[in-house]
Length: 243
Image: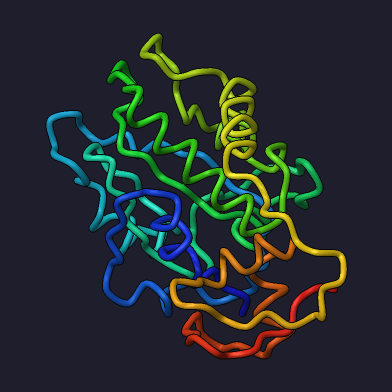
């Protein structure tokens, strides 16, 4: 089962406050998970419920829908809670859209839940900026374009409204994708010499996300090429990279 165990390191490297929920790297539903994109959800939690009132629900699920219910939960305190590196029950029936087959969103899409009641609670500038960075980081790690960021309401327009705008400061999904496009430009890709030997020697502070970004690879490609089963790397270690 393909997973995204690099998320926490990647979020931190882009300046986000991250909370790794115990067991997240091995948490996931049975079945294939080969992420190609990201889904934007809101939790519909009460605005007076605190920073992350949905944490137990996204971990344990709801009646008839076992958890995890997302891979990432963004709290009202702007902390990015990493929930699961494996498959989650978040998309449900829907599609097809942008190459994702009908009713297969859980297999091919990362779910990001954002704490918001969806009925008028303001989407603050800080929360939107955190969302921009989370989405851009995930797309970079997957080597995907902003078109692969979709709203839950775009995946399942007949039954879902999230993320709901409700005149509370949330841009349209096209505007969200434009914001993420602008964010991606600021994150960029470091220059790599054309005469690359195909080997990257790990330096102190390196992460798989940054190495993959430098060599224009997805993290999954980098891990597969080096037969890595975890994100642990150490200075001096030699990794195969794209030439």
